[in-house]
Image (cartoon, rainbow, N blue to C red; front, side):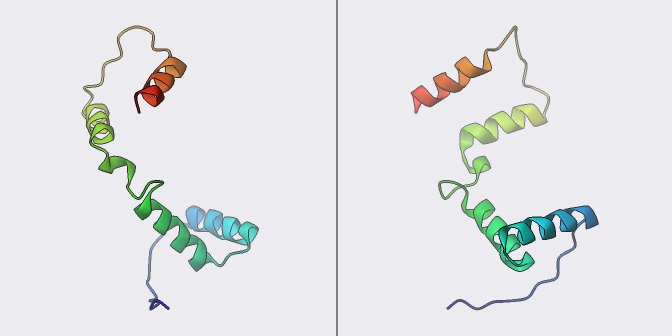
Length: 87
């Protein structure tokens, strides 16, 4: 069994309210909900966080730095399919 530690965190009141509501609806304690969310974030869907992917990081940096220029119309559905097929 793993060691459990108590921590003190500061959260905005509305976020805490929403977390408590979600925990109650799921039949969890606040601590268990926050632990599950944090574990999911740290693990990611495939064991990695999205920004660990160099392609995602590069795209994010372009967006963040204002260097992401859309030229003309982009068919989002087509782009998603193209990305999936390239995997």
